[in-house]
Image (tube, rainbow, N blue to C red):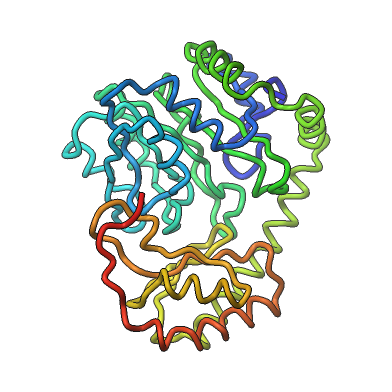
Length: 330
């Protein structure tokens, strides 16, 4: 699939064309995005190298990149995106993990000037940017920016993603787009640690992309998720006004509800009633964690969304006594 795969903004097809025209970058298939992150940690990190991560940010990335004990340095957010201006004060780093297209979990989008400043900082400081193109296919109203990896020539960018959200979680296929100079060490590490991604699966996905079915599938799913997103926001506004503050961005498959309550206890309580969520505080590094819930809606139907919000309203009363967050888990 590495010859047929292309990954970028809106659909996978865009970078497919880019890779044909830019042989200096190559696409590598992975079993999962977690495998991709683990491989990058093994290839690029040396003892003592720092890793910069958005705060709050994706816990899976922190776990995979930090598995060798390298220090994880939190990057604060500004207006729900990575604060590029804060980078000079954080010291040297070997890797920087970010979700510029749809910051996870807060949902902000890094604009063009911020992307340029991020690449310039990385080039000047010898840092590799790991760009996770999280939820790029599911922007509902505005056309997103181009991926960082395709915007600048010779940019130190390692671009990654998976088909778990665009197709189905059980597919277990991810990808990396990397400069040709680092292909050999990444492939070698992949072969000795996890083996090859099944060729039949790769060929099937490649055919799905080439035939145009993938683009049509994304169009249908984008409309479906937009309808669910609108319903979720409507229900929150009608039933939870004054109890939570929704962080609403017109993209993705989850909604963040901020508030002063014990988010860990409330998340566990919701689980006993059949509704999944994660505490917002769990996505922070350090002591300045905020509380709230990160709630996905991709697999829920309209009735389940309405029932979930009603159940959440009944649970917010007891949970309003906010716990002492302390140091959030990594």
